[in-house]
Image 1 (spheres, rainbow, N blue to C red):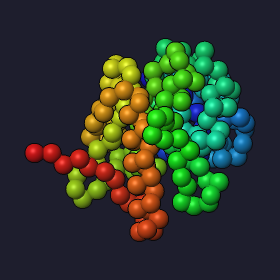
Image 2: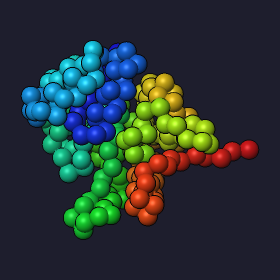
Image 3: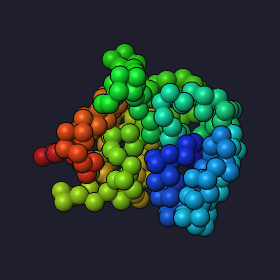
Length: 214
């Protein structure tokens, strides 16, 4: 499958490499595809990867991953051109974090709205699925924890899109829990804040969530 990664930060690089290792073709999109960190990632990741503009990555993709800092997300979508993502699955790995008060950040949106819902509004013809936002990037692919595979909570409005994302997550070593529609991002994004605050308190990012059942 062709995967478009929108964003060149740690999340985009980790997920892009993970998809490539599964045998997918991956194109990383950015404002400047010739920047040094993109070249380094291409060399390190190896076969099956390429780079282009946001619009080129979006047009290339059968499935796209939105891996941007929140303050730039709407502009990246505009540069990618929503028409290039129409009818496609878009995995929203973002969190609407506001760093204006310093660290730790606060959520820029909450209670009656969410980043996931905003992304779906900006991409009205796409099938947005919130995923990967509740764990640090070192554990997004093949998470290894003593208690067994952690759970990834997802949400979105399109059943087949969620099944596609579930299949990817299982291939990456996750157990998956579908919470429902994209409005459930209102609860998944605060869950990311729990992950962030615990990281700060313990000075470690080696944790994830597990729903215990009987």
